[in-house]
Image (spheres, one colour):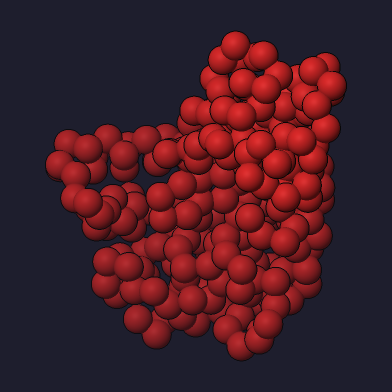
Length: 269
């Protein structure tokens, strides 16, 4: 875990159960630690959920406290999740959102991609997928772009200049993509800004993310990695990313300057 992340809830729940069973059986932490071969502070950390309760501690606590397998049964739930994919949940929230704030570093955001640009990305997926899968994914991505027609929804995009110069699909595909950005920027509910190269250690170097607001004014933040995706509604996380997005916008060009830069890059191709 990073210095700012919270321990998994399952650690805290399991640790609390160990504590409840231990106190009910009138066993001290010192006694449990001695039997399991752990220091007092180690047992304390596991009970408080700061450390993952080990199988050894669960087995010893289960035996000493007479839990009859109830504590040991928690072990499978303490293993790290093998797959963290939250894309479907994100898409459901995106479809209903009344505000979307999207920062992208190396690629044009999916809601703004041309068919040709999207197809190049889908076809370059690794490990490779079949042609029919590529086409299905392209169709699905283009269908999402109908959301831009919801004029009551605010769409705010900040795109790093590196994404404009990525040459995805070659000069022709990229020029079409840049012109698409210029057209989308004319929509009254769409704001497109460019974060220019050379900003140094700005908040924009930490990677892409999206923050959404639902009709019930609940905020979610979403991010993707190589093999996982994360969706959060935790107020602290959302607040942190909203502040980061605001800082990125302050470093970015305004809408007019951004359109001028996009046009210049397109003319250079």
